[in-house]
Length: 181
Ligand code: PRP
Ligand code: MN
Ligand code: MG
Image (cartoon, rainbow, N blue to C red; front, side, top):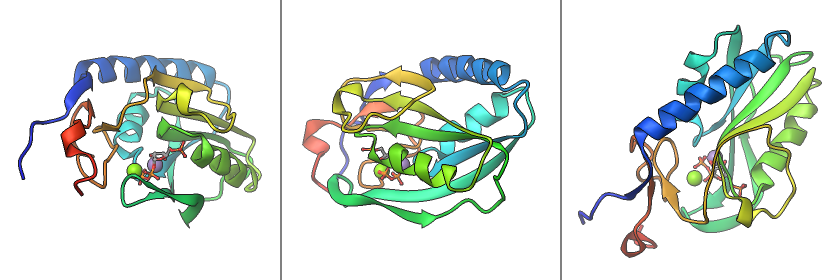
């Protein structure tokens, strides 16, 4: 069934501008901290990571990790599950975890512990979106793109039941489109 596209929360231009700012800040902070490894959290971070990584002006490599904490789009499955670990050796390297969104914080909390177990030189975190009012665990976030209200957001990598990940902007799922997967 065709419905209206999600309402715009953050436009492509707003996202691009903020990604540029974050890239400049990270490039400055890591100028003397190399090698830098960006660890993208699949699936949600894939577009943010692609854009951010290409705007950095310092040497960097890319790794991916896959976890899942939701099932059926909106139903919480409970614990965070590790689906795929990093492929390369990150021991002694500076790790920057790249997330699309921090909601309850459970995923990032788990990932920080996972990354530390590999013996890196440092572990920091970067998220495009942060829903502060939903926090259940206190996780350190070093770089935040936007703090947002508690809405179901999609696009720029984020999904709702796997839908709308490739929407170019961050949109709000319309109430009539919820729970119809
Ligand atoms: C989403 C999002 C974060 C996590 C945030 O991933 O991409 O990784 O949930 O939620 P939390 O702070 O409450 O843990 P999801 O599990 O939906 O998987 P996906 O990235 O593959 O969509
Ligand atoms: Mn995710
Ligand atoms: Mg998801």
